[in-house]
Image (cartoon, rainbow, N blue to C red):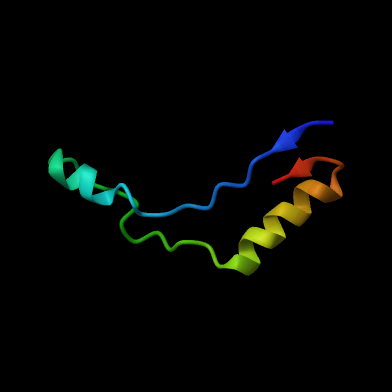
Amino acid sequence: MSRVDILPFHKLGEAKWQALATPFTLHDTPSPTPGQVAAAREMFQAHGLTAV
């Protein structure tokens, strides 16, 4: 069986981009809600994949 790791987006690295004077183009991207993460996990599981 194949495994899929669900890794929710976060902005913890944004300060590093700023320190490098590089535009952080995902600044306005929201982090997913726990419900959205669960829904993504369920989609993979519905196709027979192990989602963690």
